[in-house]
Amino acid sequence: MPYDKEKKKKYDKKYEQSKKGKEVRKKAKEKYRQTEKGKEVEQKYKQEYKETEAGKKTMRIRNWKQMKVNCDDWDALYEYYVNCWECENCGVELVEGHTALNKRCLDHCHITGKFRNVLCHYCNLLRGE
Ligand SMILES: [Zn+2]
Image (cartoon, rainbow, N blue to C red; front, top):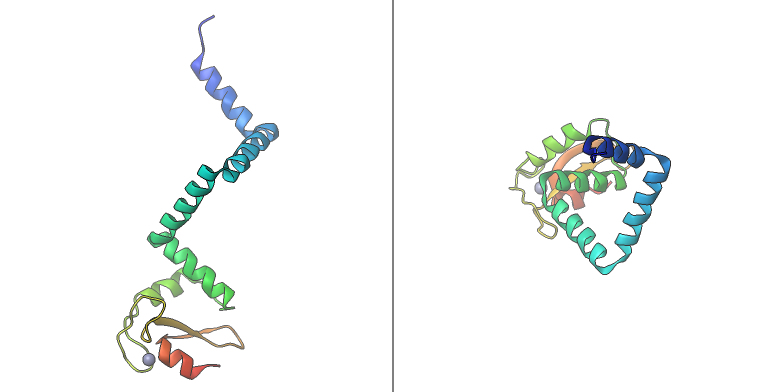
């Protein structure tokens, strides 16, 4: 009987979707992650992802959630945030970054969690609560 590639493919797919197949793959993945090479690849992947637009967005929104910002349209909020280039309080030009005094900050009410303004770091500090 000739080797049936299609049949094999179908069988593999079925196996992959089976409970046993999923388990096997999960185990292999876990094992790979424990290796030096696996760790390296994962780290690199994470790092690279953070540099992408999608990654930046994901990280930013995750950060807001940790800050207890309350929002029902994260996409819209993010769009608004990244397109804001002036502090809504003092009008200073905003920059991306982690240390600059005029870095872009999301000001939110610490009681309700509701987004208020996009501010520079300095104004955000002054405003506090
Ligand atoms: Zn400001």
